[in-house]
Image (cartoon, one colour):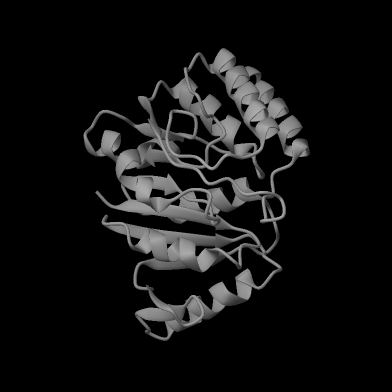
Length: 246
């Protein structure tokens, strides 16, 4: 089964090369779809250079300040005309994906591709249609911001109340889908509302959902974390909207 790994990117120049190297190192048949959401920090120029190298027939490119080669033969680079948000970038990637399984990978180093085996196993074994990777099931975690933890737990609890699911981490990046799941769902959210929206629509579809433990190395705002308290309020609204009206 081929895995499509969808990587939405916005202003991750410091991390994107290492992320792609780690994704390429995973031992699965895969395609990697990198969607730049109109980055302004040099990320887009880097990805455009990689795209040009690939178009010129190069099978690999030197990255990480000349320290490693990134295989290019199974990467596709997509470029958003305007900054639309994570949800919009994911929709673009989902539409372009050709794999049997679709996995979401953030472009920072908070989530490590070494967890792919754990995430994919329930689908490979035929037990699951959807897998969530939970940061709160006991995996190794960087000790981080308490109020982010509280906010995540509150939003997950509220989502669970409406969906009647027993998730511990609705807001996790690591979500994996059998292709037919996404083909039967119409997504609308442009920003981080993707997380509660996809959860609500999966619950309504009665798909088989598994949750597995993953590692997590959360960033500080000084290190580039983008989600804010405003996104928390937006997520709260999206939980209500997509469970009650959508």
